[in-house]
Length: 278
Ligand code: C2E
Ligand code: MG
Ligand code: MG
Ligand code: MG
Image 1 (cartoon, protein in one colour):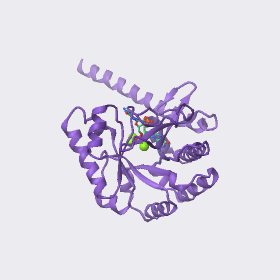
Image 2 (cartoon, protein in one colour; image 1 turned 180 degrees about the horizontal axis):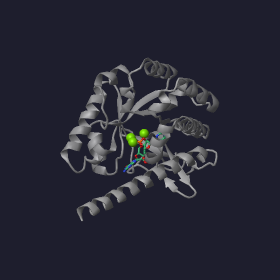
Image 3 (cartoon, helix red, strand yellow; image 1 turned 90 degrees about the vertical axis):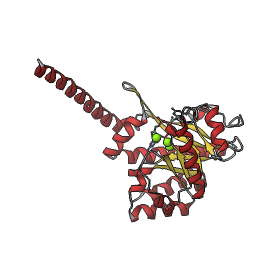
Image 4 (tube, helix red, strand yellow; image 1 turned 60 degrees about the horizontal axis):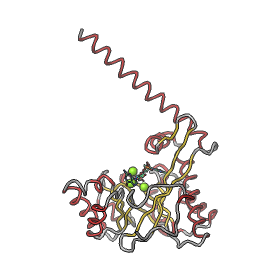
């Protein structure tokens, strides 16, 4: 009886695995044609200056709407595209589209803001990444000072000359750099200083804990202090309510992002003239 039971369990498990790898293969295959079929689009989420309540930046977030699979969240296809290398062409499209959109907003007469673009560690490790950025800024006519690249802490583990050189060149160009999801990965504080990032984005899991436990408060306050000590500005991600906002303002957090201010939306659904004095 026990044996049978075990076999049954194993069967279920392996079926699950099969389903998982089939899904993976489907994603991998469908990703190949997604750009050409115009299934990808960018949504933009406001980042607000917590002192002035004004819009200071927009973060570009990729959306994939597949005719049969439906909406596929970035957290499930970005890692696959990183493993297959598809992230390189996908990421170039994102960077181009986001820079072009920011230039369009400026050309419409809106006060200039930064566009924040998520960059995979894989992209940043390409030999021609800096050249790609230069080309895109030229093609779109966007001034480098209105572009910010977001990378996760995993980049700090890639301690190579190429990476140091690329980061220096980007800085020279006038592009700013921020560390996304700060606090969730392994960070060597000495690297943090060495690479001179401009901003830290506090991961939304800590911000979410502000309203329900004391650790959330202690951790966010500590990250803010750390950022300021290292001369970086700090952005809190995932602000959903007034309690979180009030605490962050009290701790002198520079900027904020989250559903409280606005969800990611297509560019045409944002009214930049009303964003954002709440
Ligand atoms: P991220 O860069 O940390 O982006 C923030 C994520 O939090 C977004 O999820 C956003 O929709 C969500 N979010 C914002 N405010 C709130 C809030 O108040 N509450 C909650 N619960 N969530 C909030 P999204 O769009 O699903 O993206 C997930 C991740 O996928 C991103 O995390 C980023 O790491 C990655 N990603 C998205 N677009 C791109 C891209 O174009 N390139 C690369 N390499 N990665 C991307
Ligand atoms: Mg981000
Ligand atoms: Mg984040
Ligand atoms: Mg994230």
